[in-house]
Structure formats: structure tokens, C-alpha cells
Length: 294
Image: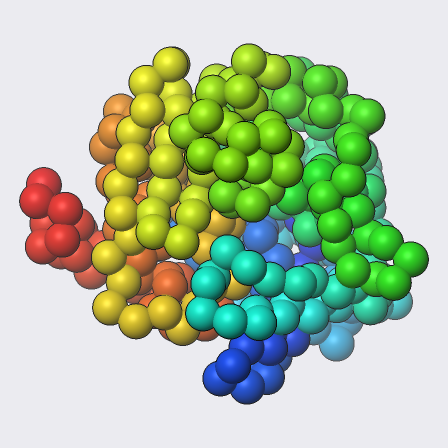
């Protein structure tokens, strides 16, 4: 079978700490993105690594119609995401355990039109895996955090110089970054300027999320749409949801502008609750009509 989209990345057992308190959430970019693909009715597969004690995550995705290919590991990746204030772009992420890198053996048997790589930090998605998928993907997309962020001696993730930048970015059709990551990568604080700098390194489209919305640079044209959430309860997974929504909508034949609006609407509803998106396609379409005048 050829899947419409294959989402690749480790499950993360997240402890989220904010002024509202601490709570545990089932995370991982592949998990957030798979919920979007399921909502849109695409043929989707997920490739991940996690401990058997977290099997419920696999079972939930399978219940949504996602085909999951898990590798069982002694420990799941565990992250603490600390949001010190009200700015959703400011956070400190600490790693206490890792499920290890995705391997070539996990992806080689699978065929997909699009592949979305959702590493949490450097080392989870090896360069050899990017090169392997470039040879078989119609669309290859990735979250820059899985390459830019390095796990330091103190367990804190920080953006550091990245020797494989040109090799990875030159292989991608779509790159996702949040405003902080885009600035660290491009040396430009303005998201639009950062996106243009990043585009020169190879990706056909750059998706940048920030506290107010999403910006997409595709084919030299900038598209921007605001988030319209009524309350902010689910910051973690914002970018994972947004890039999955954009990519899945493009797979349906939408233009970059249509996909940008769709991604903004999907992400807005995700931001209203912690964990993956729970809204139906009908709810998304209604929200899009009501808040984006389409």
C-alpha cells in the first residue's frame, strides 16, 4: 500500500509546566500530526519509538484508522516543557530520557506520497534517513526542531550550530519552524525575513508559526493567517498540528493560500485544548467560514 502521508518521530511523554500548574500529556509531533491526517480522512501511517507502558498511544491512533509501526524501547522519550509566562513562544524544554533514533529499517518497507519528519531534538532523525526518504517521497517535510535543538549536558534543549544544515534543508520540500527556531536558524528576528533566508537553502515552502498565527513562504510568495482561538490551553503541539494541516491540505490539491488558511483554522481549534486535535472536519470547515470569511 502507498499511504498519502507517513508521519515519523518518537512519542514523547510530556510534563507541561505553566502558571496554570503541571500536567502530563501524550505528545510527539507524529502524534499531533496523525490526528490531523485522521480528521481529514487520509490514508496515513505513523512510525515511532516508545516504551510498552505507553501502548495506549498506539491503540488510540489505530482506533482513528492510522496504521502504526512502533518500535518498542526500554523507555519513551520524556520531556518537561516549562512555559514561564504568558508568551507561548517562550519555553524551556528538558529531556530526561530518549527512545533513540528512528532507524532505516523502520521506514524502508513503507511507501508514502508525503513524509513528515517530527524529531524532538538532534539525533532522532539521522541524515541517512533523510536521504533515504528523499529518494522515495513526492513530498518530504520536516520540523527544524529535530535538527536544530541539541540535548545539552544539563538536559536542556538549545539551538546550536548545525553542520548538516545544507544537506538536510536541500532535501526538503517543506520546513516547519516556530518564530524562535526560525530566528536562531536564519539570524533574522522578523519571521518573513527569516523564511526568505531559509528558502535560499533549499526548501520549497517554509511554514513559520508564532504567537499570533502562521506565515508560509512558498514559491517566493508570502501567505499569512492569524490564529482565532477563543482561549489558549494547548500550546504544545502547535507547530506539529499546523504543518501537518498545511501538508495534508496540499496533498488534497489546495493552493498554498488555501492550505495556509486551513492550517490556521485547524491550529486555532487545537490551541483551545491540550493534547492532539479533537475537532471534526465539519467543525473545522464551519470555523473556517465563520472566522476567515471563506
